[in-house]
Length: 472
Ligand code: FAD
Ligand code: NAI
Image (spheres, rainbow, N blue to C red):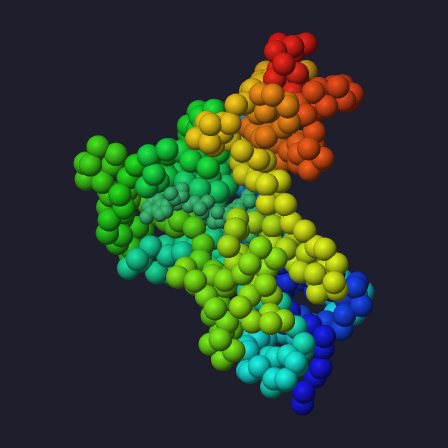
């Protein structure tokens, strides 16, 4: 039977489910299709982010951070502990509960907003007069407009598929049943550092092999250097400039042959290997060919600045299109597309999309890095303030890192803010607001910030742009 909607959304990750809700708020009759299954075969909307990404990784980062604090930081506070242990099974069960709470939350939101949810794989059938037919299971849905938000999958090393037992993607990395003695990671990007931190804190000996000669190349160099120092101090072994060769995996573990930065042959033997070398856009099963939906050479759906595809009435957002693979970027695009469908002026400012790496110290930034400003020849002023000089950070016992401001040399407009240190993920929001409002560094420097708070380091870094810090 044909079911008619104004909009069919394919994929209920952050791009799809948020886009569906916004469209429903704007008065559209919306269907959202998602195929993700929970452990019992039931629906698990939320996509990569909720099921095997943002949410479960942060749950494990939290558990492992508690464990590390209990083992290393509590003693400083006079808190004694005997027989500290980690029950990995319980930790994973807690993580799974957090995930299912989020799945349920999305199903509730669909009900509340009258979005009709279909569990299964959505595929284009054909273009019809004034719209499209999309199949899901036995049903055929028709709609004037379609929003594709089918996300991305982990990229495997050529010749080394994920078996999720020894060679793990982000999926397997989030459900290792016991702490491995030796854990190898390929790629020192965001997943490598977050997952490496989780398992190192729990006792694994972690080695990260990275192809590039620079550490976190997209991050401001000064911040990346500070983070590298902190991770190395914690015991994360990061080898840069390597060339990964053959990988052999068997019952006893994994052996990774590689050439180190000097070109010398090495072998890394580990119990588990996480491969985190980026992600690829996902259009598997979408049947894009049936309607002539255009993909680029990377397999991403080609869209314009407004997320319009080559087909009238078909839009695409999130990881399956160009741009950073971030949940909040996908969400913003989903909202903007729904508003454009309604004739409004939905807008996403790519210059103010924040990045956060949830390690300890956290790394967060928005806007341009110092190396980018140098490369474009833009005249800028820089100001930094270390957490070492911040009273709240001292009270927390976490004084690693700094806040850094980059502002235009003439107008003082904030061009970038970079933070490595405690609560960087929360502190960056002030910088995003400031940049959205085209604030100057002086604007932040003149705002009253609560004392004692980490946010005073933000104010002080803004003052540092004009060389007038008060506490350093
Ligand atoms: P997805 O979340 O991938 O959702 C796509 C959905 O579409 C899936 O549910 C899939 O099953 C479904 N689907 C695909 N094809 C079909 C089809 N044909 N029919 C029906 N359903 C289909 N980003 C952050 O911003 N912050 C973080 O802290 C963060 N942490 C991460 C940690 C890890 C380990 C990983 C892997 C990623 C992380 N990300 C994070 C990235 C974030 O998860 C993605 O950017 C985000 O999920 C993209 O959203 P999306 O809606 O485009 O796609
Ligand atoms: P990434 O792009 O962050 O990092 C991949 C790293 O692997 C790079 O440093 C790259 O140089 C390296 N690499 C590539 N090929 C290699 C090879 N053959 N040998 C050795 N190193 C190699 O990708 P990652 O970590 O897989 O994460 C994917 C994406 O998921 C991120 O880019 C991000 O968009 C998203 N994500 C976001 C998070 C957050 O916002 N906190 C957390 C985790 C993921």
